[in-house]
Length: 297
Image 1: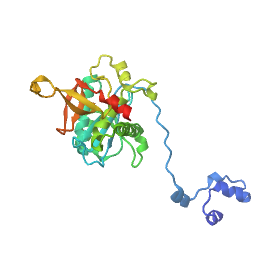
Image 2 (image 1 turned 90 degrees about the vertical axis):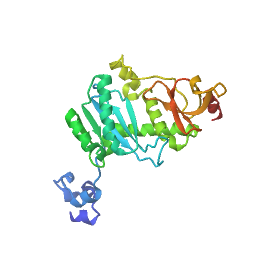
Image 3 (image 1 turned 90 degrees about the horizontal axis):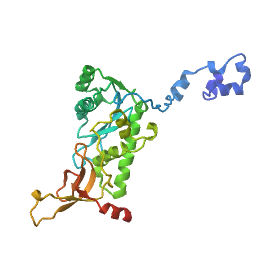
Image 4 (image 1 turned 30 degrees about the vertical axis):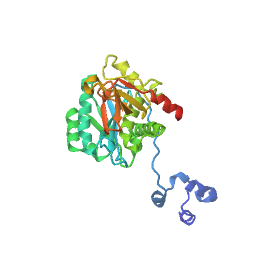
């Protein structure tokens, strides 16, 4: 131990190489130093979680992201919460003005799962953020018999599925915004669009099926999912104005910006730079400018 102190607390294995006679009939691995624990201690490494198919919606991963440095998006939101089904990897995103909205959002989300898929969430897995321990949410989870699993303090690796999904969402959101030079205050719509697209893209863990296809394998008759022809996020969209909204001399269409897909209607969301408002979802749009935009890029 004296030589251990003299030489700056090296590993005892190296000390045994220097002074073999000190470790005659002794195993260097049996020696330890409390000082080394204080000065050299490292956290355990975390291996990736292996995908294990189970039952749709029995285990839900969740995480809250924010606040955005962009103070507000066009709808005044600064946060979003993600819910990822462990079996299908289907992802839901909900934008929030305040983190306190998360509890009510989960109550509504759980009710939607029970109604649309006739099944119940059994386990909710999150990090240890305090918004997941709100009294209303905690009481609701107890009454519903939902087990709440949380990661340990400062170990986001234990909530790996949700953390990686959020990173993927932001990577896609940045890509589609950069490609068409969309202003940052559209970040919320970009994240929602990213989730819509990811749900319809092949996934390696699903053996290159899409999350939507995996859901349809278990629920082939569900009406929950909608499929629209994809458009380039941020492209110029020409939205038709129906006759009862215009006079005979008014334009038959209005030029807008395509900002995503409606979650409640089978239609596209478009933003009018003139009125500064999101138009009601519509299927009747033209986006011939998206091809000109791609040629310019």
